[in-house]
Length: 121
Length: 108
Image (cartoon, rainbow over all chains, first blue to last red; front, side, top):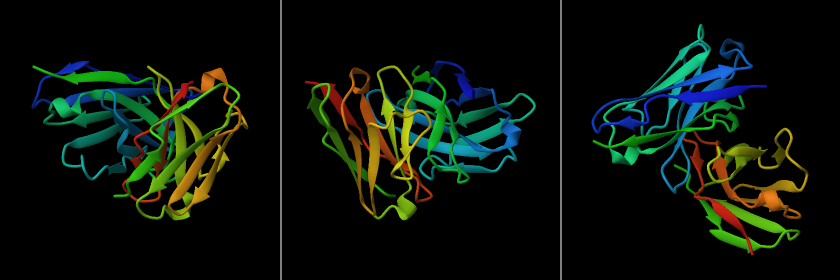
């Protein structure tokens, strides 16, 4: 079955760039679907960050758009998130997920386990 | 941006009881593009319902979704011990998908 696994540094300094990768197994990204990132600050709710198609077409949450870049590497069957100029407010569990439909901001039907990123000096 | 308000914040019930969770949108959600997720501590959310009323693969039929426009409901007909968790709604009918703040279903 489809599985997703996030990886990346657990600690990032303020003003630096957060970088995470999501490795997909059990399904070829090139076969379709959008692939997305969602985050959850400690003790809080969920926030959709953005999504990417295998062609490289991206769609971002307007509130984060100026700082977010999502890219895809079909040869490695993975996609990545970069969030620049981070502050403590970006501390969260970051999830990667498969978008369940043809629209980039659709519901997410398969999720990774999540990775905790703390922004602190 | 469509704001989703979930109520109640916490629902205290016993196993076997019926749970009714509400998700109200600040504007009409087009095409009933509303989903429900279950999240247990330390775990990722799990998709339960999409399209307001369609159960995701493998979801037991004690979970059902209903509603349209601005008012949506998730019903758990008979609570099982594994159903005690936090539930989130998500609208994806606008270009900026948003989530509700969650309802915690706890054991009474």
